[in-house]
Image (cartoon, rainbow, N blue to C red):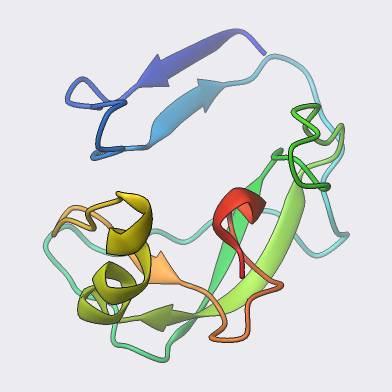
Length: 118
């Protein structure tokens, strides 16, 4: 990886603006053979609740492992309203803002961050 560029308004206390741009040199293994490019939503658009979205990342595959994955992982999950997310995340001290998009399964088990999966 050549460079990690974090969002300039990222706040590690609230996780608001929790997004980064990775500038890659060379190649890296993908999580699946059909993963190529990510389609981004248009600026100012909203993604309706229930829409299936693909989450990608190199996060931990085992809770508290803090080792990450050598292969880019993918998971398809439905978008959940921020109101529902706030109901679920407020008890553990996380505030979901209008800058965030929530997605996951009610029963847990598929998530972008296994730390908070049910």
